[in-house]
Image (cartoon, rainbow, N blue to C red; front, side, top):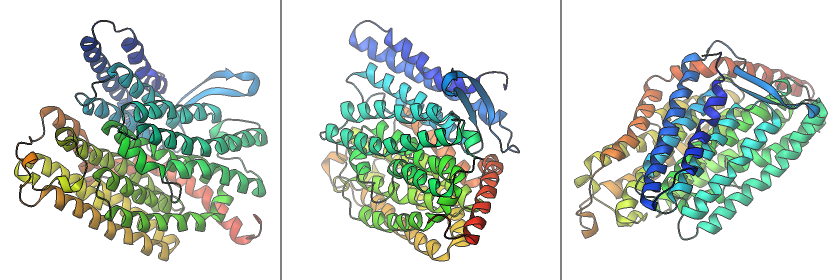
Amino acid sequence: MRDLPILTLVTFLPLVGVAFILSVRGDPLMVARNARNVALLASVTTFLVSLGLWFGFDPAGADFQFVEKAAWMPALGLSYHMGVDGISVLFVLLSTVLIPVCILASWESITVRVKEYMIAFLVMETMLVGTFCALDLFLFYVFFEGVLIPMFLIIGVWGGPRRVYSAFKFFLFTLAGSVLMLLALLMMYLEAGTADIPTLMTHDFRPELQVWLWLALFAAFAVKLPMWPVHTWLPDAHVEAPTAGSVILAGVLLKYGGYGFLRFSLPMLPDASVMFTPLVYSMSVIAVIYTSLVALAQEDMKKLIAYSSVAHMAYVTVGAFSMNVHGIEGSLLQMLSHGVVSAALFLIVGVVYDRIHSRDIATYGGLVHRMPLYAAVFMLFMLASVGLPGTSGFIGEFLVLVGAFQANSWVALLTAIGMILGAAYMLYLYRRVIFGMLTKDALKKITDLTPREIAVFAPLVVLVVWMGVYPDSFLSIMHASVEQLVDRLAAAQADVALSPLALR
């Protein structure tokens, strides 16, 4: 397996599907049917190939594995350099799991420009996987920014009534931060004389330079995560995006920010990360409490879940900047759990929206009488979002709070308030949609989950229970890489403690 260029295969296999879809000709119905079939086959094949990363990964190794390197622009010292470690390999697998789910979920709901829609998702898969595999600064930037194009089109072409406004808002917010990130990457390249990410992770940048580099990178990653107060693009994007667009946006794209902090800010700029930890803590605590309260006030199901995503992703930054093993591992597991649970919750909304064409909570009530299987699946993901023990949501939040308590007990206490508020808004949503009497005429003929919808939810159910019952199968993969990162951060914490004015 290690002799195969498996990362290249996983990254670019979806483009083979794109080539086949582009060659499809015939009447519109046949083209749409073939585009769906090819997209599903290409994405499932990509997932099956990506399983080689799971089975072939050595959890005892902290260094990058499955490394591939070839000259790209040798005159500039840039290379096609790919590899994964315990931090990135699980995000590759998350991406390859969710794309087939998105395609299957769109099977009947997308009827216009089906060919182009499937191409957009396959191109997006290449960009997502490439981002988590790239070990060259500018190769990373190409993939990181490349994902904006298909996501912009998915929201802008197949979205709701305000899709154009939401698509441009999403694009401009994320692009503005990314421009500053590009300047930071250029400065790092010029300062260190290399664009090689593993080399830069051990390079000691000058303390005063670290401050400006950290702030420039923070502008990009905070928007992507998204952190308060630059989160305002997310609810609009979620509400207007088609169901599958919301799934991949919440499931993978939001993880770009957390991954960026763990891959760039913390290891490359450790002194500045220590210095700015109070800022990150403050923004995260505000996000947890404020956006949870906003979620409680929502009457649109998608908006409620969108604001809950902001609150849950704030746990990620609290855990990451606790700078200890428990916190960072909790941050990673929280991202993986949120990627599955939030994706499932948007699919849950999509099921009833396809039947009733409304996202208003008041439209529903008593669905358990007509949709018992739907109610059971919804309950599992709702409880996972709340953080019930035995589900994926619990272990991530628990480890984040343990790590935060070791670093700052007040931050841990304030962050824990989000768990109480999270239970309030999710139980509120579930009670109003599922329980009560079935009084509305529009709901009296609503049907339960179809075999296709069961197939969509099945892998997500398995993952939520698996992560909740046996989290060590995931924690063991990331542990060595996290320990290596923590060792580097510990040295920076000691330096800043001895010389607190060094960065001023």
